[in-house]
Length: 188
Image (cartoon, rainbow, N blue to C red):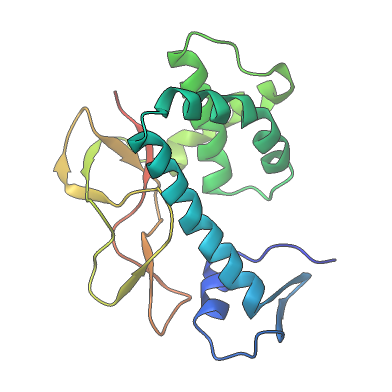
């Protein structure tokens, strides 16, 4: 069965010297160099598209489009292995619907309730400012809209961070994350 590799494995493949069609396998996961580069590029393109929509004054339409797709994404995430990112995804959804004074989709009620409990173990207790980008020396940033958190700059109106996360990978030791942790939910 072919499934997606973790982002770390993807970047390992991305920066390797494998031929384009050679596959790397880990357990039941398999991905070619081309597939990993395409996935990395897709993450970057997503960030650029979101930026373009906001700058073009279509933030409200973008928000409505994202909101309408939440159930589709949660359906996929429900089947993922338990992880901090899965927990934070469901927790963020619960916060979003709460702030919008809306009810989350009923089919995700149990996952959302569990994420509210588990969030205490995967998120920082306090809130902090963000760095503009992952710029740690020797660190290759992930292509993601999750921003690095400045843990030396507390801010009650800032962001909580995902414990044990990193904004990049250390080259050539790509199995090691580097840089500050990435943001979880906003504290405002």
